[in-house]
Amino acid sequence: MNKKTSATPSLTRRASLAAIAASTFALVAFAAPVASFAEDKSIKVGIMSGEDEDVWRVVTTEAAKNGLKIETVVFNDYTQPNEALERGEIDANAFQHKPYLDNQVEQHGYHIVPVGYTAVWPIGLYSKKHKTVAEIGEGATIGVPNDPSNEGRALRVLQNEGIIKLKDGTGILATVTDIAENPKNVEIKELDAGVVGRAIEDLDAAVVNTDWALKSGLSASDRIAQEPIAHNPYRNFIAVKQGSENEAWVKTLVSSYQNDAVKAEFDKVYKGTGVSAY
Image (cartoon, rainbow, N blue to C red; front, side):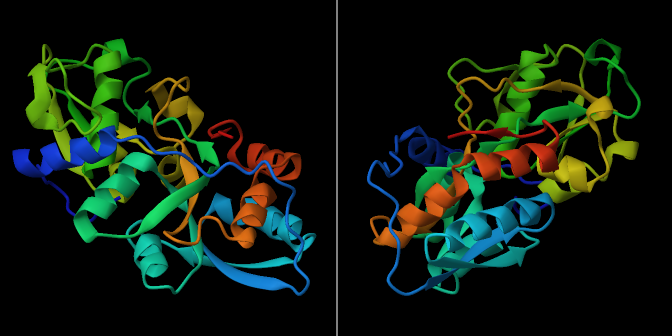
């Protein structure tokens, strides 16, 4: 979700990121009835291009039933929706998980808070050359996303599969410097999250975010491992500018996503690669 092709955060930067990621947060609870507006309220919501556009068409329809007009603003770069929200160019966004937001807040000082969960896309290990993890041999090259939140996530997938072992006590923001054991001497190649899937032909395997896997033409048949869904810290959410979280339109926005109609479209569009997380 960042733009460098090979980067290793400093120990100081990693320590501060880890402290942020370790902090807890609470999403706003929406127990009260959904607000209906005397006059239609209009908002702009930033989303990523691709399958989510279909999902948000249904969200927009659901919101309109309660007087909330949603204009979706489509982005192609993960760094843009938070910049736009911070500047007030949009009213909300829906594309990120908490470790990524923590990193963005630490880097840029954003005043952005999550208000309602959407879904989780379990990150997977993909290969065009091997049918199983056991086939990955000595000296293999494995690609991983290079941004702090997803690199640690990818390395944990490799650890779960016995390819590497991380140092004891390593948090979710692990980097290649946290690898304690590498029995097959695999080369970990750090690439941009949007590039790693497209580089699969040049790699033995790659850990790829599900949305980028779909955009890269990878399918479930190419996935040879994935992270567990239970207790997953990478659930995505709707986020707003701090200070807006208790406004009536936020309650309506969240409920317009968290319903059966949207879930049905989500399941249709993502074909089991993502899971509703509310």
